[in-house]
Length: 271
Image (cartoon, rainbow, N blue to C red; front, side, top):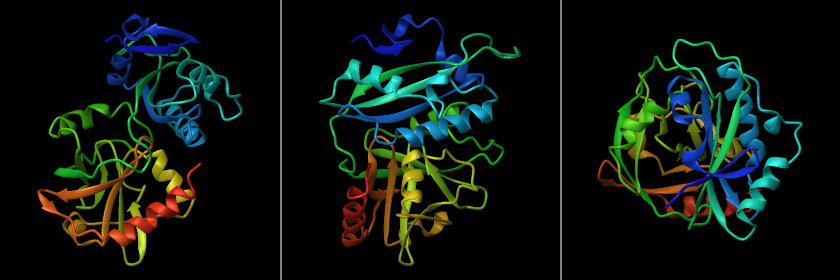
């Protein structure tokens, strides 16, 4: 099946883009945002905009005018006209500079395109997944708020899992940081917590939303204590919160009451 994308306001087959976007990611000259499109809107759009600002700043190029914090909703209107207002989609928004490559200085403006894949599940309603690996993270990796230049660091671990599985990372201190496509949530000492942003990780927009709404707070969790917390979940902007059934083939003894209360509170707060 042909894949289509929205590029400069036009609907194009993905293979007809005038540049190889993933080459730019390999050269550290681009990034991408993965977003949930829900019946005509992107609920966490402002959080994605804020992370795009930080990603552009980290990579040293100008934010595309369409994604400045003062921009209108032109892009959202184009996406809505394309996808309609009755279904849900996973969007991948790629922001790259189109030419150059390794050893070449790039000074041209960034460009972007958007891919869409239909979603079959609601927010906070995905099946529980299994954590099949816990791997050390390279402490030499630079802190980057968004997804892109470090994409390769996630590809190899992600190949060690299948559907409904995840791989988690820990740092040189043995503290948990994130998953290959998720952020970590855990309940301990009466509070929902997430690993501190002081650790190198992708700063997920759903994680940012939870922190801003005071639904979670930052903390530190040793990889040796993961199975001892009262409840453990994962999250991302597309799926919301994701229950974890087992870690390294051992079923978790999660408190169902704590998780259900959290999801009820979360659902009443969602934008």
